[in-house]
Amino acid sequence: MTIEYLRLLNSMYKRILDEVEVGVHAVDASGNTVIYNNKMAQIESMDIQDVMNKNLLDVFMFKEDQSSTLVKALQDRRETKNVKQTYFNNKGREITTNNNTIPIYENEELLGAVEIANDVTKLERLIKGNITLKGTTRYTFDSITGTSSSIKEVIEGAKRAARTSSYVLIVGETGTGKELFAQSIHNASNRFSGPFISQNCAALPDNLIESLLFGTKRGAFTGAIDQPGLFEQANGGTLLLDEINSLNLNLQAKLLRALQEKTIRRVGDTKDTPVDVRVIANINEDPIDAVTNNHLRKDLYYRLGVVSVFIPPLRERKEDIPLLVQHFLKKYNELFQMNVKGLSDEVIQSFMEYEWAGNVRELEHIIEAAMNIILDDEDTIRYSHLPYQYRSKMQGKDRSTASTSVDNFLKERADITASLKDQMDYFEKSYIEHVWEKNDYNISKTADVLGLSRQSLQYRLKKLKIKHE
Image (cartoon, rainbow, N blue to C red):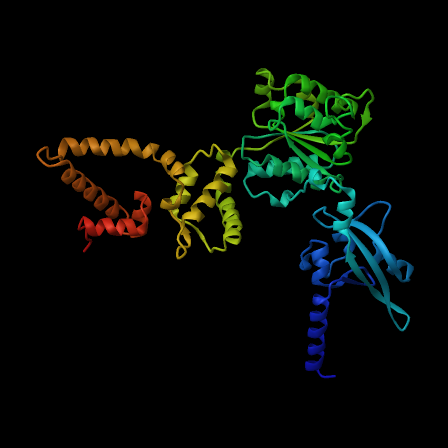
């Protein structure tokens, strides 16, 4: 056969593999992946390049009582049919497939094995039920953007915490990414295959949150039914309690008992139920201040704070802002089908001077808002694109300078015989000329400083007859 014919056959085989509605995964005799089609990548929520030419045991994880059907085919050298297998991809996501696995020989020499898989993950989830309460975890430590020494130190500490089952207290201001760290700890722990449930303690009144956390016994109150709480539903996994300092102190005492005894008692019940749950708690204020202000019980703080993760605010790691900006630009370029490449120097400078009370979340919202304003033919976010609320905060420093300029103008150059309109036009013209000259007569830079669009500035230059020779 000619090389051209072999290339044709290879292209046809590849196209056929990618079009069939079953997953195809083949390994060589050492367990390294040699064939992995699109359907298999879809079933396992994987990128093909993360699997190809790698040993499958380095990529996928299996429960202690189960092993890979492909590896078993290599070891036992026999075919198996309709074998259900549950395992986990490299992100900790549970996968369930129904497999036909066949060892491949040539002249009695084992070359490898191939597996034909059908996805039954969705069916398994429906059978388990309550999947909405179990939630989904999207974040791992790779999701955390930043190279500053402060954020790297926190990441390393959180990774060490993931190796144990100790309770964790995550401390950070609003918008610093506390849930991102909580999900990352869960996904890096040996509980990654268990449920991850998140509950904001400030979102519900006390009488409801107790029932939600611990469950109810039929007849406990009018309409009460036998209902497991979040502790029982998170059994074997992780329960994230957000804004733990918003719970009243009596409920904190019941929570402390559950953490110490590792048992819960449903509302209206008389017996305890053992639970195996790792609790991660978030708090948006300094825990010592929370204890002092009676927002957090001291004994609960000591129990939860076995491992404490303090996330620095954005103002203390401003060197991460350019990386975060690129991350959010990529996110919203994909979402909005845009091609914004970056920020003007003035915007970057203002970001570095800003205090970021809302932290990373505020930065993301500002980028998103600017990309809703930017024109289709523009690829750079300029100062005039930023939200009004942000610009008004940043202009506080400029207002004092502007006030001095107005005072000087009134004292030295104002014509008290001229009309208000003529005097305002004169001041506007003088100010625009001054800013334009300071920015080397660059229209875009001048528009950014003035908080105008290019079109608005050009209109004013023409209206006020401002020219540059």
